[in-house]
Every structure is written in C-alpha cells, then in structure tokens.
Amino acid sequence: MQNLKPLFFLLIVVLAACSSESAIPKKTNNTLTKNNLNFDQKKAEYLYHFAYDCIQQEYPNKLGQVLGDSTYLATPKQLHPAFYGCFDWHSAVHGHWTLVTLLAKFPEFEQNAAILAKLQANLTKANIEKEVAYFQDTHNKNYERTYGWAWLLKLDEALRDWGSPAAKEMQQNLAPLTELLADKMIAFLDKLNHPIRIGEHSNTAFGMSFAYDYAKKYHPALKAKIEEKAKQYYSKDANCPLTWEPGGFDFLSPCMEEASLMQKVLSKPEFEIWLEQFLPGLAQNPAKYLQPAVVVDKSDGKMAHLDGLNFSRAWCLYEIGKGLDNAALTALAKQHFEFSYDKMDTGEYAGSHWLASFAAYALLSGEE
Image (tube, rainbow, N blue to C red; front, side, top):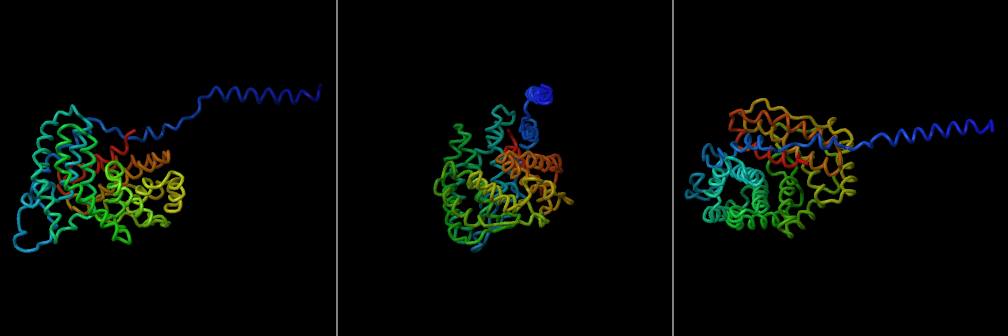
C-alpha cells in the first residue's frame, strides 16, 4: 500500500492537469481576421474620385501607339473613344474596373448615378467597335500586351459578376473586345517560350493571373492555356531572388506575382511544396524578405510606381496567406497596404490616375 501512494499521487496530478487543460478554451487562429481589411463606404468615398475624375480626362496622355502613316495622328478620344482618359489606355481600363467594382459593392453609394452615367457614356457599342478596330490594325495588334489585356478581362469579369441590367448591357457592348483580347492572349502564350520576369507592365505572371480570374469563370480555353503555360514557365523555378526587389520603377513584384499565379493553378499540397522551393523561408518569416517600398518623388511617374508595388504585394500576400492560413503573410500584406493607402491623395497625377485601382484590388483581396 505504501508503494501505491506515489502512483496514486501521480494519478491525481495528471487528472487535475487534464481537468485544468480542458477548462482553458482552445486557441483559435483569429490573427488572420485581425489582419483583414475592411472595404467600407468610407474607403469607397476616398477611392472613387480618383477614377471618376480621370476616365474622361483626355490630357495629359501617353498614347504608346505605332504610326502606320499620317492618318494615325489623331486625338486620344478619336483613337480610343472608350478608354481615352487617365493618361494611358490601360489606366483608363482599370479606372472603369474600379468604378464598376464600387457600384457593385455599394449599391446605395451616393455618387452611383453620376458614376454610372460616365461608364455608360464610354462603354457604348460604337465606342467598343472602334477599340476593336484599333487592335485589329497591323501596326497595333500587340498594343497593351499583356497588361492592358488582363485589365480588360478584369473589367469584363466585374461587369458579369455585378449582373445588374446596366452591367449586362455594358458587358454585351464590351464583349467583342473581350473575345478578341482573350484570343490574342491564347495566341501569344502559344508562341511565348519564356516568361517575362520584370516588375512592370509586361510581367507574364501578372497578366496570366488576372486573366485566369476571368477565364476560370467564363473562358475554358483560356483557363486551360494559362494552366498549361504557368506550369511550363514556372514549375521548376527555385530560390527567387527577393533580395533583388524592388527595382526602382517596379509596381509589381516578379517573385510574388509568380507565386500568386502558381497558387491559383496548383493544388494546395502542390503549392506548399513549390513555394518552399521557390521562396524558401518566406512562409515562416516573410518580414525578413519584404518591407514596404518608399516613394521619394511622387511627381515622377516611374518612381510613383512603388506605391503601386506596395498594393500589388499586399494582394499577393493576402491571396497566399489566406490560402495557407498563414497569419504572418497576411500581417505583412496589411502593413504594405496601410503604408501607401494614406499617401495616395497628393494631387500628383503621376500616381492619382491609377493607384485607386491597385488599392481597391488589394482591399478586395484583404477582405474576410
């Protein structure tokens, strides 16, 4: 009996510990929720005017066209009657996307009628027919490849997802251009043997990632082509040099855009293995590798790109962090977003003509 006393005492201790442990609520990972962004009406009121003010502002304007002869010399509005504002064609497109997104998300928004009037004035059947003709021109068939194409598909996706009567009419008007650029994307990817890995417009991973969001809902052939080429381009990539980022003019992160795309086309187990090969240690300690970029001169259009980089990094980090249930990634995403969000309204057109679109997309990615 004497020998049983220590065992009896040990049993009492174990039972007490188990009872105490069961009384403690199990930890739940609510850090992801704390790191999420709230895309509320206050943010909509802050963001909408950037796009609203510029989608019909014709000048200053950067056309970026190829002149076949003297007849190509025309005003931006004559050349691009739908997308002539916001300094350049692609910014006009994603300015329209921003406004469509706000209308769909906030149906009671005070400025909705005025916003819709501008959208409907631009996205007419006749205007889109002229846009289609421009892209069919021999000298400009690759115009805005692939950045502008991807944003046009995003605009079409937003109109379809919204689904209001006005949205359906605008989407039907836009459809010929959407179909043309989707076909162009497939044809281009078929010919492109090597991806373009820079932090600006022609980054292949970005174009494919945005196009994939549209294609997985509305274009099976484009979806299949992007899956095929993403795996061809990126499956064997390893040790992406995050220490080389950012470049001075970057508004996209080559490493993070690629990771964001691969998360979309791979299963979760496949992606986890690939990510550790591609960005070793990122999932464990992302802040070691990425910090928000600082814009020194916001009047310089190229330097202003770095605010956009903070937003695009934010949406990539949110997408990956949520997919992997990784609070460290979403915390870094929120840090990047907040670093540039309050610095947008400087009055400098170099940033104001496009940054609202990037901020809005980051907000959508950062919601619960």
